[in-house]
Length: 429
Image (cartoon, rainbow, N blue to C red; front, side, top):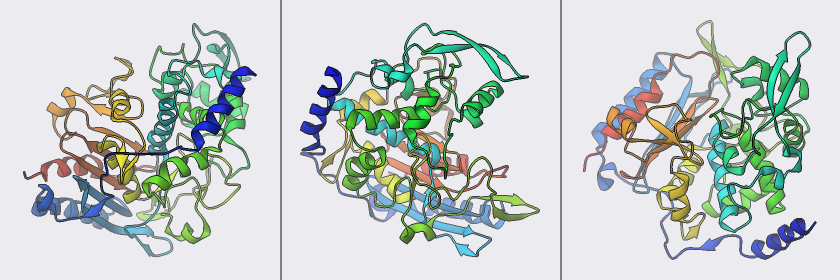
């Protein structure tokens, strides 16, 4: 009770001045010529040609590409179709399901509360969500009836574990382990997105009762940890998760087209998720989720790991705040000292990509990645999304690349590595 009273007191005190002004005032994103920021128009044209070729060859139905350097948009173009079935052309302000790109935004929200002194990163999550007390690790599983045995974990799950995918939690329907797919499905865990009437708190409390893949901190296992942290934000801040993101991040940064669910006035800007069928692009069918989840259904599930939708420009604005050391337009979201910690190696050798390590919100390019070529400078941070979206931001060269697509199922898509390589080669200063 004493802990709860303390949290409520802090919420009242800090909500009065939730966002702080900065002595810096970096301008919002604006357009400029490539040459004015040290990039070559001629070389950026290679990106234009790549995107047009991908559409012409039928490798992708539609693309929005955006490149920023030094806070200036030097390329922002739309290609192909937003919805082939309904004959809708792609436009630059189209809205995309960004799926796992939501994780960086949720992590940012966590660190904003950390900066306010609400908790320590190595606090056990059970201090705030008691259902996680005394976690168990899967020992044996019986396929015939989906029963299992479990043993006590050797430590509690911490907030840091959840941020770095080392908690031992799994990812249900997309988990790499069939046993956990079955365990999560039987328990009624809501994965990724839904049109059903359920809250993130309800799903997280069910998740807390299930066994872990491994002891916390033992391995990197991509998981629903950021969904747990979405609910954690609600508990600590005393605000619904969607309201926290809107008032503390999206509104201050001018990210007007980013959110979990779209109003009717923006529904027609949502890009269709498409797949290739008999040589044609068709809308992806309803599977364990309905791709129309951002505009239909109960609109009550705020997935911190995968639920947001956004535009290329909105997400570039978010990344520019990071390149500015946590500030944009005179509003400070995070301190640059906090960002320095977030970009540090938080998982040691547990993240097995030789080109990158994992920080508190992003994959981060190391010296091997820089030297390999095509990934950016040391410290370039990146990730992608389930529906074929990607981003990267290079803090040394001060550029951002965003490539938005909406496909599921097999595609012959080479644009991911090509785009990243072509952005880097366009530097001309």
